[in-house]
Image 1 (cartoon, rainbow, N blue to C red):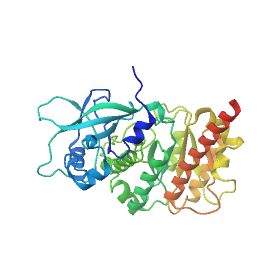
Image 2: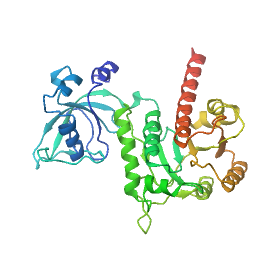
Image 3: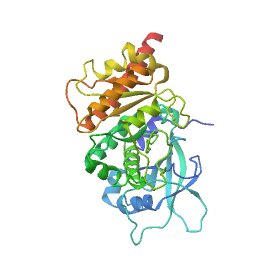
Image 4: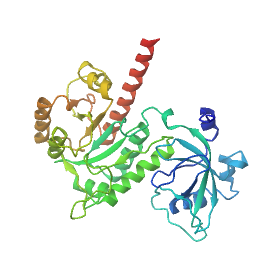
Length: 355
């Protein structure tokens, strides 16, 4: 079987729209037909005008044969070049997935579009740390809506694998309402997931980070008996994170790195590669960063960090982000970017040692 995962192919088709289709049973493979969602159909026909002859379409695709093509990825089978066509309502094809916020179908939009996989552009393993398990998690206190969108978008681009909102004593109630809804509804969490999905489509990732109500759940659709999602506060998080007997919590060998302001120490890159942290990070490469609210951690929460870090140094550690007080979204981006740099340095050092 010929290997068609040529990096040159990816660059040649880089101007084509990318769509995530990993929410349905359809599997990306040569010749497979994937049914696109109504929102994706609206996007391709009304925004990108994939069937039209608009100047915008011609400008982005010099090759006329590509005007009805897109790139598809599902987080498992890499990235594929696919040809889009209209299908009948009763045609039986594999259902795809994907979300597009506030894109409403209008008259004249085809009720169904399908995409036939023609050529694999990239294999999943071509992207280092392509699974959510390998990538760093980000636990963050809800912040104002427009800043939360920046956080989700940029941390997705930088390689975060999971986002988990947490409740802190100084979290602004208005920020909680704006970010995750007045009742912490899963619909509001879904908005964050959509932002992460769209950022993944834009930044060439082969995987999409997930958004969960807490670290013990595997999906965003987990509710309690009253229909609200189970967000954890700091005390609950630390108790469960360090409780070895809790088999429901799923973070295998993942160290919790708590970002604390005005804390003495070297920069984040030095700490990630320092003697104290390197042993854990290099062995499992699994970390989770926890970023506080705009008002900073409370005195009670600071005491909890000291207590749990002293009792469980292998599971939780405080880190410094430098001498300056950073906004929450800036701190989050600094964490994920620092982790990326530490991994690149480790890979480079390992290559030099083996040379």
